[in-house]
Amino acid sequence: TSNCSLKKTSFSNIPVSKGEFSKTNYPHSRELFTVFRSTFGLHDFRPNQLETINAALLGHDCFVLMPTGGGKSLCYQLPAVISKGVTLVISPLKSLVIDQTEKLKSLDIPTAHLLGNMPHEEENSIFTKLCMSEPGLKMLYVTPEKIAASMKLGQILNNLHCRGKLARLVIDEAHCVSHWGHDFRPDYKRLGEFRKKYPDVPIMALTATATPRVREDVLHQLQISGTKLFLSSFNRPNLLYKVVPKKGKSAMIEIANLIKEKYKNLSGIIYCLSRNECDNTATFMCNEGIKAISYHAGLTDSKRNDVQMKWITNKVNLVCATIAFGMGIDKPDVRYVFHYSLPKSIEGYYQESGRAGRDGKTSHCLLYYNYQDMHRIRKLIELDDSGNFESKKVHMQNLFRIVSYCENKADCRRTLQLNYFGETFDDNKCISNKETACDNCRNKAAFKYIDVTEDSIEIVKTVKELCGSGGGSWNNNFTLIHIIDIFKGSSNQKIKSNNHDKLSLHGRGKQWDRFDAERLMHKLVLEGYLREEMVASKVDIINAFVRVGPEADKLIRGSIKLKLASASKNKLNIETTSKHTNTPVNNVLKEIQEKCYENLMDVCRGLAASLNVN
Ligand code: ADP
Ligand code: MG
Ligand code: ZN
Image (tube, rainbow, N blue to C red):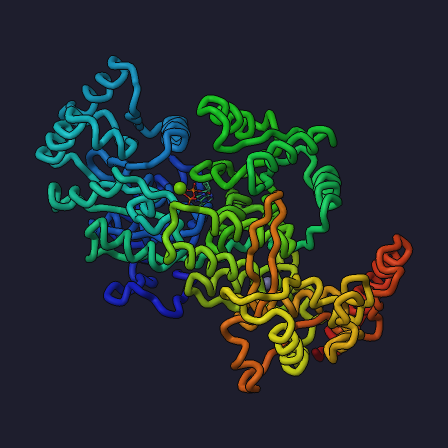
């Protein structure tokens, strides 16, 4: 049962295998099920596992695309046990290799690994086993570096092949062959030669890569164009996705309280942007009594290994890390992954949050978002001298996509993520799962679309007058926040001194919820009607000044309709620009009103459900 559909598959000449290999009466089937139950101790196959195993045992090349935690290992481990000879597994990470070898040994499957700096005797004893007329190993794990470096290993593989004892080549984490992937390994590239050398040995490549471009590249590099393709849905049904507004310093307290309340002594990761932020977050959490530790590229190799071990063995619960942490770490029981700073792309977010819940149990992925974090990342991209113009453009596009994702209040998070990878997804599957439905699906009834075309035109016109389009000419420098203040009809000092309370835009959005007004401005930036110009300042403050964007004229000409998903709580709208704006009482009041509204909506939804209407 292949549970996936691709909207625009780029593997145009390779059909996705669907049900082709799901039979249970192949000559190998009886042994297959016995080994599955008694050696591996499992009962039910996950999607595409049985199909892949069958295809492999029938001698086909296989390309397996399955999300993290989907159970890729079994797809080659089980055939290895049944096949005659030795299965060679290439895996990029030492820790993973050691992990897997130990696990297989504990299942009584004769397995060994060869790594860079092993004692000679140990290495020789493995070589001896491989040279036996009936090799004493079923599986051999190696890193790609080892294959490239060891002549001896090359000779032994040749020898195994001559004797017909080389059962299969497995390339785990196969995205490492691609420049486009997030973890390119030069030595993986040479694996393409394997096919020429041993044309009759089947290959299995596996990866959790979701992007079509990388998938295509992997196929091409490994020269396995005649392969069978197994493509699973990349939906992770056990993960709950939620975007949480990040309100300055109080966000940290909020997170600490949440961890103490919900994830006490459970494993988790908080992703931060900088080394400093990792250290500070870890210190803060420790002071709150949470067993936390910091991890980033500034630490020595041995220190980083140490952190990893402590976390894997549950001596610490929480790692506060940059995105350098996690690739290839196989910890099944990660119960939460929080992003304290904005991810750099939707793909990055999918991979990083995907480290939660590999064991299939419910786990939470919270993204703490504020718009200003985008400016921090933008600055990094713009200051990065290594990137050329093209790559900067791609980085910016990726960044805008993830910001749009965060600003989106209407569409299912899973749909947004999976569409990005070209997979269609029916959001009913999200809504129907009570435990892990995403925030937007949960709030569906609370939001409605409003037409914001006229307001947007007025905003863009005003920006055009006040700030121009940048690009060399003299401009007035105003921030988005200032434009929002005008729109909301604020009469603060800056507005008055610039006579901006005389503008026709002033107060046009008086009735608007401040949060919605911000989201509208962000939307106008993300869709190119407005633009923010980053202006370097001497101190470490990022100034982003608003200009009209490349799409502005199209909007002003009236050829575009704009809609915004808005919380339909107009009746309860509070004027937030009054001089009481930030008094605690007003905030509390607002919170209470919002809660009331939510409860009311719950009641309505319940009623609607019982009456079977929407
Ligand atoms: P991947 O490599 O795709 O990320 P793994 O092969 O590491 O995933 O498997 C993830 C977890 O799921 C492991 O703990 C594994 O033992 C478990 N697993 C795999 N297949 C099954 C199955 N059919 N039934 C139960 N658990 C499974
Ligand atoms: Mg794996
Ligand atoms: Zn959803």
